[in-house]
Length: 321
Image (cartoon, rainbow, N blue to C red; front, top):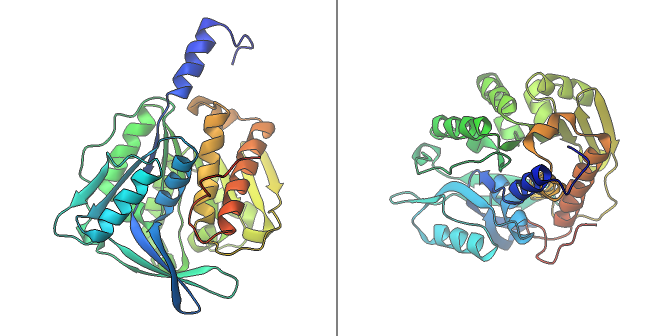
């Protein structure tokens, strides 16, 4: 970017970046959280939804693209999104289906194990999609992106966003309960990697996908499809790979109340920093180590804040450092 920030070209460029929109594509469900086998809270959830709500709470006015039933749970989810600054313009309500429900059981270290109740075959994602613009931001992930009922329309949408120059962030969120399907699903996961500008996942995700516990080897495999890889490893910190660079960032010393939404909000932190730093899509593959540090440390701040509450999203009064 030219140094003269007052030049007409740069002023127009910055104005365009300030007008960019955020879209999240993923599942919407009601999370009922249990501690010691007793329900302690119920709230809207879903990997991408958690990230989008946090971005709404930061004042970014994002859009959430998903499907829910035309039922009472769907009403709760829809109202919650609106109350947190998220547009429901692309939240499709389907008659004759039930909104998904997830039971999250916290263990002794407050990590969650899930039992999820939803009809994957009933999902279609067949409503009208946005008109993406250059430098818009799109976040997607989880098993929603692999669901064969959803995937044709999802791929069409993501390819359109990519062709229009939007920035795409992908989180595979590929957990143990899907590990036995990896040979069937790996081609779809890698197709998703190739559509993204940044892939962010946990070491557990990539171990389930590539059957290795070696962080460097995980990054080598993912970087065949996407050059920018961020691997979160809980207390072991964060590993960021891009071009020929590799950096490690320590985790913050916290006492977690719940780790639900930690990775999702790490993704939200990346998107927030991309916006605040006015980083365009075309710049991502050549970002400096200083810019990556801002992205990763902002994301760590978001994830740490979520771990210190029972909510799946940052507090409404959250301030970045």
